[in-house]
Image 1: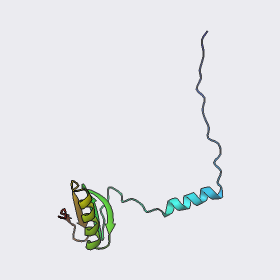
Image 2: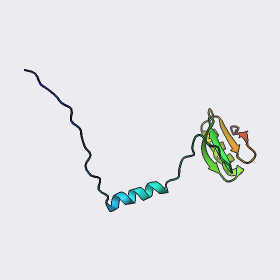
Image 3: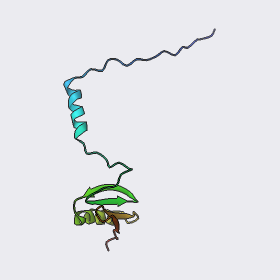
Length: 96
């Protein structure tokens, strides 16, 4: 006796737009967007961890505070601050 199996096409049921789903879409639009990988910042100071931009800060002091705290917790990371206006990087040293 042989069994023949055929593959059928599954169709998704009609999507229903209810009030709860619309509310979820609004929340999705309000979330902050990640920095695209192919663009560099044009203003402010960016915190780079292992050569990847992780956050942006309006002042050098704010970026240095976050970078120093991160370096204190994880001394093996390479943490730098990127100054978008001057287009240079400042290495964050481990606090002793």
